[in-house]
Image 1 (cartoon, rainbow, N blue to C red):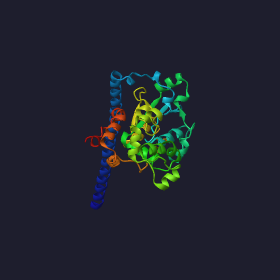
Image 2: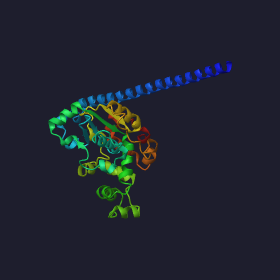
Image 3: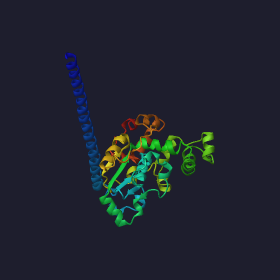
Image 4: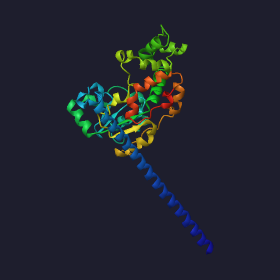
Length: 321
């Protein structure tokens, strides 16, 4: 009897320990959720305050939504079924978010976004763009729909763009960008005719060549920035469009979960897991080691608004002599 009673006491104690563990886990999860919500509010507050300051100090800041051209709305994807607008920024998880937007348009049960081809969602007319609607509908959707975007450390995004578009075998980017960069900044009067020949000979633009291209006034005048390296605020206009959610690449998974909860979709669709081959902030120093100090400082000025609006710290370790 005593042994039986001892066993019962041990069982009760064990069950109490399990209950306590669940209770503490619930509290921990609750606190984590609170922190995520607070972080989101801080991001939106910073954006509002920065934009309000711009309205007082710059001509650009005095623009209104009426001044924006339809071409400037080319990166806003619309889902009328769920009343969502997503502004995609290349090199900031945009393929996976496009997969989610595509899946949502297929109706329930939604297909798994990670099963959807990345090439498919980048094809024209596979997603509905905001600028395909008449002006009055654009205005109404921007007023009533939930609007979100995801951003990234501007310098890390540039490294990712260089790696993906100029270091990988891509005939389109070689012909339209790399050959010109080699001619102008790489001391190659006659660059290889094709990407195949360029890769076979190892004649490719260096990261510093790419930075020279971005800094050259000729570029913006003659070949406006391609979306993969265009400033994020120029793609999504966060001072003209009031976004309801500002996600960061650096906290991608937790931000994606929170956004799907806000949209009441957390049980219906899952954001695809992140690619493990992402450029890390820790490697930024290595990449910029070949870029002279003065060029780094000019590059910061070129992307300064992205750093400021989206809460990224000035990279002093790169800019201080």
